Image 1 (cartoon, helix red, strand yellow):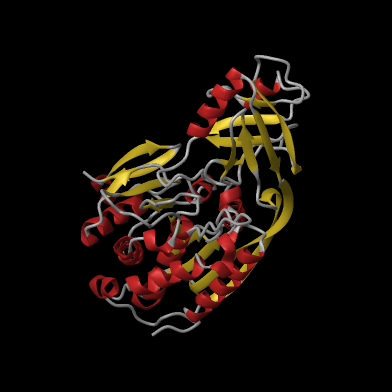
Image 2 (tube, rainbow, N blue to C red):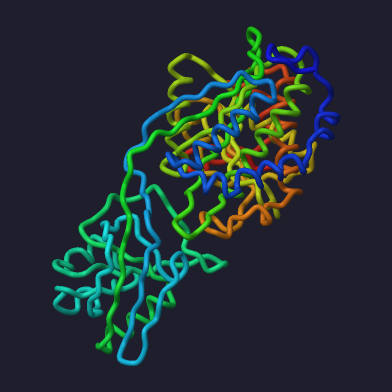
Length: 436
């Protein structure tokens, strides 16, 4: 029923929902989270390989596929396995990278290990010492008393699996190496620093790289005159592997990509004739949603006005899927509410801090859907922790939303009577739907 020129006939919503395959979606998650794609950090070889694999998947759906390259500046790169250890008069303790110790984004590059005595920041002469920064003290305050020090040791919480999560967007590098310690390790080393006689040794192999990113666009059908154009989006990049530390990025956001691809597969055959359908698989979300910012600006610049459905995190649906919307999204929220009721997926107002905000900021009607994730930005974000039932439920929600939007005669860019069925509340600068 589908060709590159688009389908000629659709079928009913329940038949569309019955066509959703959880097995197909989980296979996508497993593939994207595999070793070949190495965590998919923007600009890395694994990201490029994942993009090529996804382009082939879009082509398999009958989409006309294009890519859009753009530069990304100063991406943090831990280029060797960091080492850290400490000791006192009685023992030496090695610290595990990623759990006990990691590198702060503000860390200066320190390619070789540096050793020095321990001291509390602000309590003594800093020269030559590794300074333990008291919990709650900001880096700018710590720098004020750190001239000539070996570096700074700051506390950081770990997740339920014992990992410090990785971030790529954050402060520029400062003048000193900065090591993040899990709270228990930080507490222990703080006590040793007060007692005296302790030492710390670490390197901080971190640099910034200017790289090239690329979005993928797949057009499955163009809209007829005065018909809505539906755009499904998800970011495919992750925070990437570190040397010796796999970070599969399964829930964030291979799961969202899987939902979009499976939804597009079903909708290409199921949607009634007339409305448009396209997919954007976005790069650079983990460095500040740069891919969606670029795409949204280009859409706005050409006068395109699609209805955007973005999925970020479809790994663990428990009580409800979080929904955030922005731009002129009242009509889109109304059909989302209908879709939730039809599929039995509960919806709740909640922040979805992802690419949907970039589209909304450009004046487009946009909703973001999130259904939770385990192991955020850590080695624990593995495919086995992505729930197949959640993937299927969120895919059905997206399919129903798009099918209803394509079948409902309304002006989606104005508030309509049907939108009064949902309660719209402010969330994070946008609107979100809360089902009564």
